[in-house]
Length: 116
Image 1 (cartoon, rainbow, N blue to C red):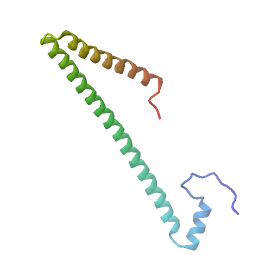
Image 2: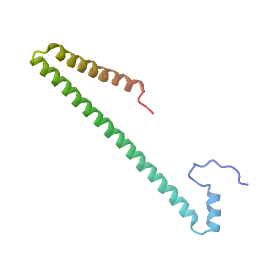
Image 3: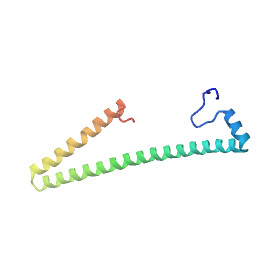
Image 4: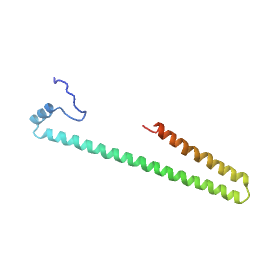
């Protein structure tokens, strides 16, 4: 039985590496290379995840902006056509939908509610 040493989860204790290498020459180097490759893979995956989250947020902002423009355009169109009730509904929807996103979005970011 080996005394417990404080080592990282993916790392092996140096004594264990020496013993692996004594049984199968070169195995300690292979174990270290495996750990390095696993770490590099995790870092690449983390980068991809962050990039995907950024792209998702950007797409959401653009789609939300496009929807806002369409709703405002419809409100303007119906207003020009003389249908004030429908124009008012579209413009009210646009205002009530857009303003809380900007106000509450800032509030959520400041309070850290958007964290994992």
